[in-house]
Amino acid sequence: MSQLIGRLRRTLAVRTMRAARAANRSKLARTLLRGRSVRGLPLVNTLYHSVFRLGVAPGAEVVYRGVRLTGPAWDNTIMPSISGGYYEQFEVSLFERLAALGGHVVDVGANIGVYACTGAARLPEGGRLTAFEPVPENLGHLRANVTRNGLDDRVEIAAVAVGESAGELTLHLSAEQSGKHSADARNAGPGASSVTVPMTTLDERLGDAGADLVKIDVEGYEGFVLRGAPTTLAAEPTLMFELHPELQANCGFPAGDLLDLVYSTYERVFLIDELHDTLIPCERAYFDRPDAVGLYRSNVIAAARPAHLAELTAYIGPASA
Image (tube, rainbow, N blue to C red; front, side, top):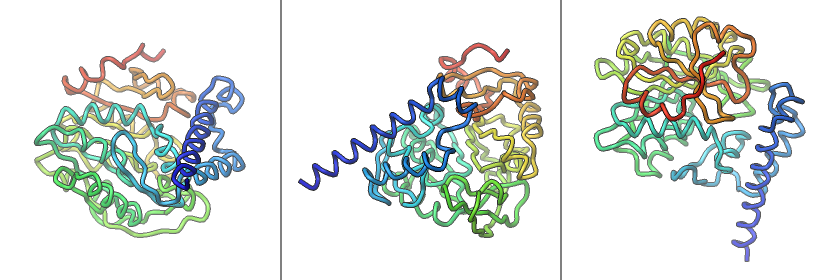
């Protein structure tokens, strides 16, 4: 009986969270909230997390896209959306498809291993993945999740931050979300603590081996990661990275400078449109518009390799106006 009640509670929680997500993505909600997420309202966020806890025990293992994952019990964003089956759904599917082409995949800011595990699970024979994660709590879950899914022989975990130069980096640890830890305290939010971690560069760590696919999500520090990778970038690996002007400005590497660096190497750059599962081809000037990025349009892919571009073709929509 207790198992039946548990399944019913989980089903109810997941359906409620999915319904809330669908409402948040509706045109009416986006108009009323002016492009902001309803989760930004404290009461709504509290209710959302309460519903999650009603159906999923804190620290419980959940299945997402065929891999089993655990994460921080206190996290109120990543774990609920993984449990609901919709965490960065389009982005993760693109990452999986590109990882399946093989080679060396790199995940900078691996967190608990959502991308690292789903990508590594789809690597062909001989493919490998390097996951960089410096935050001790996230690192513990990352290691456990890689082992839990039988991926130790495909995944190398590097317990370091990645930046412009080797040394150390002070990270501010969010008290709200395990995905908000950042090099800038403003990005981490109120109540943040801090930790100093070792830091390397992509060029130093990867050496001549380079990479074929690089995903970067480091809460505003993306520009420094790429500035420390001129040799890696010269081989034109496909890049997937977060574009969030406020976070990047706070970290001291404005989004415009990040984009200039990317466009200096890549001709084909796409804005990911999560709402329509579409890649929007963009010229550099498009990103100077104040409405260029925002909710559901804050991730970018830059690609040059023919095999990767061919894999993305089905998702490419009309060019930005």
